[in-house]
Length: 287
Image 1 (cartoon, helix red, strand yellow):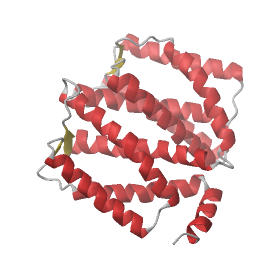
Image 2: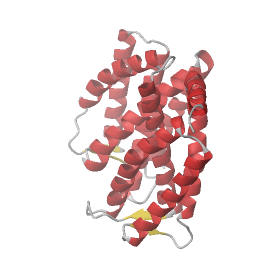
Image 3: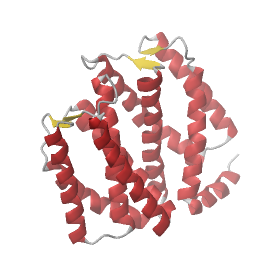
């Protein structure tokens, strides 16, 4: 339990940063920055943590190591780091304070190493501040674009939000509810094997889903997507790649998919109201 408290401390800091940003800024644009940052962290974690096994987290929330590892990573990379970078971009923090903030993050990493709740396998602590300095400039540039975004900016933001939201729900269904499990044979650990394949599916799938959310959010396309998604899961079961709990039906995956599409569509409309108006005009011209 003591391990978990340290990670919950990061969550509380993240919530506090969210609260300040919501109260003091035009939050919709900074929320777009947050989701973009979270998506970048998510993609990097897939390469560095899941495929590369660069480090390990020990929040001691799950008995399964890889679920515990991903849970700890999610607190760091889906909440803490994105919220800090969001604040830096939202409040246009000057360089001297950016250096101080990144130094504090470096100190937190060293503290977690010292406490034994985080461990390096081949990662080095100095990698973190170097990556964060680069990320700050990318995120500040992104913040300057989201108020009047091109289609690319909108698409990439919605894509980053989609990958993290869908994968977060999928991880919860597996680790907490025990609904399904992928078996692909990439890794010795069946849990790492599942996480690696599941994340890859959403990295690819979210490309299509983002196009639907932005350009083709209509009943006929959503219906087609529902049946295609259901067919996909039944094919995975038939191939022996997907194992589903006896208390779960594959159709439930497609129901959840549509519900999350509705949520992300609302997020898209909130973050990019001007783009939503353009998309309505464009869609009215389509057959």
